[in-house]
Length: 238
Image 1 (cartoon, helix red, strand yellow):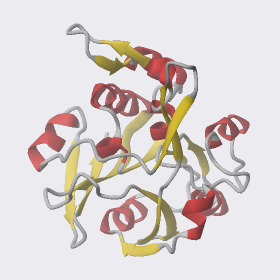
Image 2: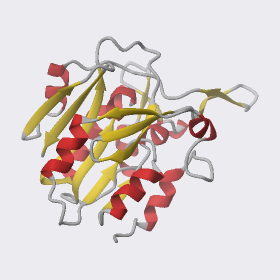
Image 3: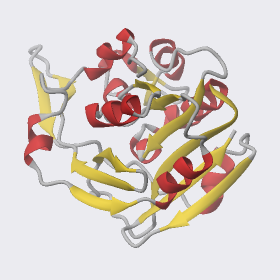
Image 4: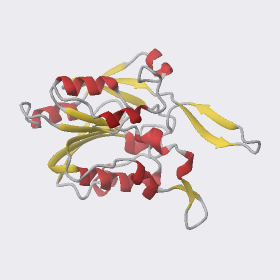
């Protein structure tokens, strides 16, 4: 059985000692069928050990699921990492923005062509605008030729207050969704006190199919799976 790299442990920042926020553990999980995940497992050869990257909110259950199949998995919580106040800079117009170069210097630091599969989940919908394209570019470079990337996107029916979920792989075609309610720092007041808010990441945008095609234009192929729960699943081949 493959072992998870030791460097993975730093990626549990912001989690409770059990690996998941207390509020997330207390909320009842929702179960959904995933056509995209089913296609991933259909296409990947089961007998060969794979190298997998999970960039959603860290799921110890995903780590366990993949390692029990003999695969190696790396996990990074990019949404938590993007909330680092040290990343905030001013853009050319003087507006607050996130430093994408520094973000990529601190995250997704892997050699080219390392991964067979990237599980992107719904990260792109909640990631700050200035980080989306640089992150997709980095993911492309870390995938092997022919490697797969699975991503979820909200449809136009989703509202701005759509909840953000942590995705746990339950089987080859099923995921469990747990509401993400991590505590995040939002600003430091004039007295130096840190003000925080409770709630999961906020939906930043809704991509239509054309936007998704443009975002992943360097990939060799793209396949859409529609569902009934305001999510579309997208499977891409490097």
